[in-house]
Image (cartoon, rainbow, N blue to C red; front, side):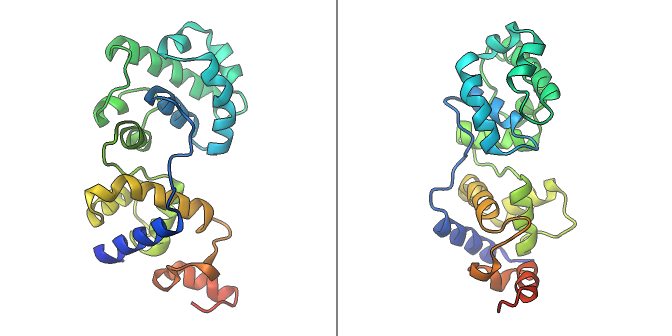
Length: 219
């Protein structure tokens, strides 16, 4: 596995490749961010943004989601996968935010994860992007890149990947590293066709070397 120093160097290289890396879920406030992240489970940010463009014009605060019939909210997000379950969770979390948190999105892991449909990854995104709290949200891109590069082990769980990244990176890098890893995985180290032939980190990547060799590139 990569050392702490090598891991930091990898993140710095990704930062040079994608200096403008950021959360691509469009939102105007933390509550909209929370809803967008809940909708993004097993769904692309592009599709979520397409849906929330009209959704956020119709719904502005938790009470708005609570007042409409569930079937209407389902219809508003129908083009998104798992829309029935997501609509149910959005109404339920809106009700809990209104009743238990004074209408404001809570700002701790425990409180966020008490909301229906909110797990560790969603909580980390909201804390990091919404409140500026250092956190690393491990999505499919972060997990794939971390394992391909050898920052983590192939058998590591999502929680273990998160803990390893937090251990190997300084805390003040966590939130930015989350975005750099996502952009690197989304646009360069892709799941099916990673761009190994032009990768500046190929010399560190065991999986990348296998891909490059198979395609006739030198690693």
